[in-house]
Image 1 (cartoon, rainbow, N blue to C red):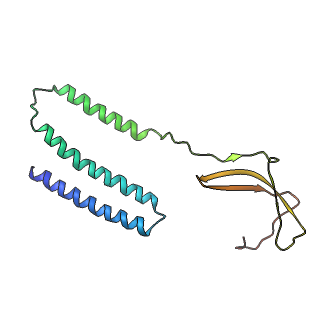
Image 2 (image 1 turned 90 degrees about the horizontal axis):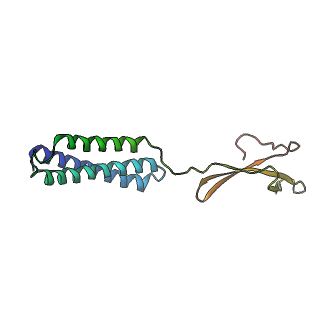
Image 3 (image 1 turned 45 degrees about the vertical axis):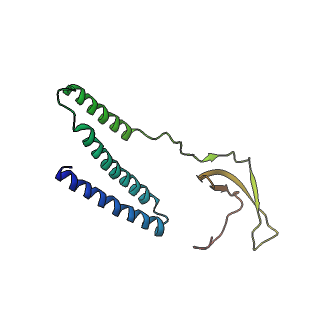
Length: 156
């Protein structure tokens, strides 16, 4: 192994081990920082891929003679890889983001009984359901014009 490549491998190994330690600490103590965890995971993967591909390329290319493959073919392969990488970077993902499903105003009604006045019933109409995650939804209701909720600040 050449001297600069050995130092670069050592640098990448140490960097990936430190990033792995940071990722473990973030997962353990910062449970809400999933964007950071994903970023660290992708970075660790890129470093590991660079380490492996650098050594595999050096292994397979050490016996290649320059006259076996014409230069134009090598340039075409490099150009194809760069074009595919740029295309993959700028294409949007195909995963569908669930949009809020809007229901008709007469489709579903709920009756809410306030605690302070048990004889009054408040008729709420479901306006829409917004899917937040696979197991959580936000329900939006419409109040009738005759009824308005009175509340002080910070009382929900």
